[in-house]
Structure formats: C-alpha cells, structure tokens
Image 1 (tube, rainbow, N blue to C red):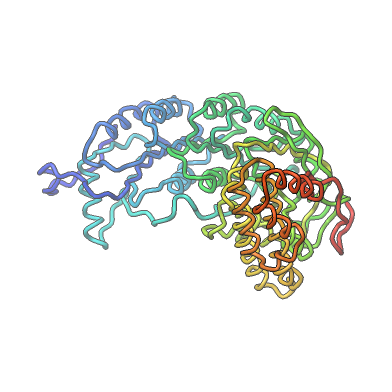
Image 2: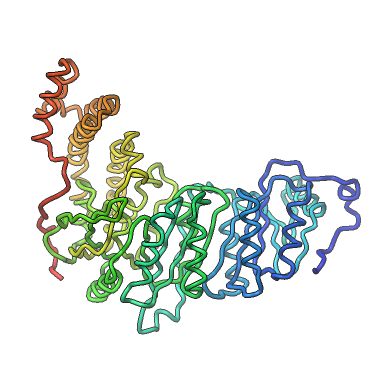
Length: 511
C-alpha cells in the first residue's frame, strides 16, 4: 500500500490530536485496488481521530473482488457506506466525478488505487482547512454545502458515440425503497423490451427488505446492462433518483418506479413516435392499473387518440387535470429536459416531475400514446396513498397551480395556461369534496372534516355547491340520517376511475 506523505512538523499530530468537529467527512474511495480495499476500510473503521464520517465507494466495473468487499463492508456498517458500481468501465476521472456527487459531507478525503488512510494526518489536515479559509490540500478538501435530500438535477451526460449509432441508448432509471416484492417484475419487464439498446440505472435507498440482494442478482446476470448504487441511509426519493441520473449515458430516459412494470413494446413504441416527431420533448403512454397481487384492470385513455399535442395546449390541460398520475408513463428526450427541473422548491418531492413536465411544455410539443403500455401499480404502501391522508394531495396541488402559473408568466405564448389559474383553484376545491367523501366511505370522519374545511379555504365559492351544502347538513345529522345522506351523495359523486376519453387538445395532430 502506498503511504501518503506526512507533514513531519505537524505538532498536533505528534501530540495525538484528533478531529472533534461535528462536520461530516466524506471518505471517497474510487477505482481502488481490490487487494488493498479491505485493509483500507479496516483502517477507517478502527480509528477514533475522524469520528463523524461517511464512506463512498465507487467501483468502476472491477473484476478483482473489490465490489464484493465493498458490499460486505456496506452490510456490516449500515448507515455509514454508500456504494456504487458502473455497468461498464467509465475511467478514473469520470468515476471520481460521480463519486464526488454522491458525497454528502462538508469535507472530502479522496483515495484511489492503493492510497493509505492515515486518520491522524487526515484529522490535522481538516483542522487546518477549518481554521484557515485559504488553506488548500491536494486530496483533502472542502465540499460545497448542499441539501442532501434535494440534490441538484444531474447535468445532461450523453456518450457522443451513441448519437452516431443506428440505435439510440435508452436509460431506464429505477429508484427503489423496500419494494423487493415488486422489483423482479419491474426488472424483468425492462429486460424483456423488444428494443435492445437499454441500460438500467438502479439506486436503492437503504432498503431493509431483500431489494438489494435482488438488484445484485440481476447485475450479476446482466453485468454490462446494469449500474448500481445504494445509499447508506434513506435520503428520500429525490436523492435516490439523482443517483440514477449520475449513471445515465442515454439519449432518452425513463424514470420507472420499482413497483411498476412496462409492457414489451413500451420503449420501441415511444421511440418510434419520437422519431416521427423529433420536435417533441417526451412521449407519454396510457396505463393499466395493477394491484398488489399483479391483477390488472383497464382504464379509459385520457385522450381518444394517439397524437402530437402542442406544448401550450398541454400546459393548459395541466392547469386543470393530473393527466399523468405516474412518472413511469413518460419517456424523455434527455437533451430537452435540460434546465427544466426546478429542484429545491417546496413541492419538488411530490410534484417535481409535474413541474418539470409543465416547464418542458412551455417550449416543446409532446406525444401521447393511447395504448396502455405501462402497468401502474396502485397499493396502500405507496407515497401517493400517504399524501392522500395528510392533505398534501390537495394542499400540494394548490401550491403547484401557483408554481405552474409563475412558470407560465415567463412565456408570452402561455396566456391560456395563466388564465386557468382561478378555474384550476375552483376545480381543486371540488376535488377536496371528493376526498372528503372518500374519507367518509373509509370511516375516517376526522380526515373527511379536514378535507371539507380545506375545500372552503381553497375556494370560498364552494359554499354554493350542492355537495358542500349537503355535507354541511351531514355533520349535524343523526347517525341514521348521515347514512342515508352519504348514500345519496355517493350515487351522485364520480369517485370511480375514468370511463370516457376526452378529445385531443386544439391543434393536435393524430399519429
């Protein structure tokens, strides 16, 4: 093992000084020699000089046993090690760059090849960096502070040779947390695509089920097709998806939720449509709904035909309706997404993709495909089910409408979308009443009251709505009267899935 040069005159080190600051130190190991990795990791975990640290290991498709050692240590030191492996070798410089983006600390210690970790020396070097803002070090340095739960959107990174190839490369980003029971079906559906030039960029958010073991199994079976990352702890879905984008090399991107699956023609059908309409930024497919047991049920397509939709018209629809309930429905042209993700805003965790889609539509048309090429799983464990219960489905929508209107203000041709802010708010008030009724049918009277009052807070004019008037009577009625009134309300309310399709927006071209 190569020894790192030490500063002989470092009195702090000679006196046994150790690093006590609470600042998190990221120890980045990339392209590390498999023969020396275990001793290096032992030296990190057996020391007491640097106490608040994380380890980030970036494996560049090694075949010397380093990846197996990294996995073993990551499992033994839960919460301390983030690991990532490239599907194919990308080179030391690119692997280092990716590793730095995975680091969450305020300081980084960079180790590669066979470099030794000297804890006392590292601690003294970080102490100098902390006390002297002008101090610099070759492999120990400050990192830019960032919100680890809301990372920046990854820059576009495409291998230029793919642009000259007959077949474009499609990156399927699968981000997962504790969905091991669905993960095999998800991965198999991607492997079974009729379009072959696909890479899978998988990231796991420190799952506690068998998710990671399943991912390792598939990566071993398809080593050049799958890249893997596992966070040392659950940093949230944004950070998990960000990990996927760090491994992306494709011209096109699908963000596939790990509890969903896609039909074999999904990617080929989307690429064909986008090739026919190169001005379009993304292709959106229809879905079938799938339950926890894999049973599918059809739903009417949102539009009555496959078509190219003008962006401004699509954006106006977004102001009134959630037409893409799953991020898994969309295949993006990667270049045309650049600069459209507004990471860090209040709604980014739950509605960031919809803000991005709206922003894209301000500049580009999109393609809609009415065939149900996505199997969208709806179950009680998913995030959308949780936000239904905490009002965020409607409160978040309220914030979202104003965010979309703000985006539209920057474009002269987006007047139609801007004009729909108030109608969208009025529709959202009525949506609150639908959630109120859903809560009542689920015997959640507290939740129903919250949605009932939220409806008025969002749209005071809702008090003239007959459903609101009858619900007002409901709260002061006797139990028998409530039962009868709820039955009447449910007969009139449309709480079932969509049964009819809408005409395509004005200016759409059938395809």
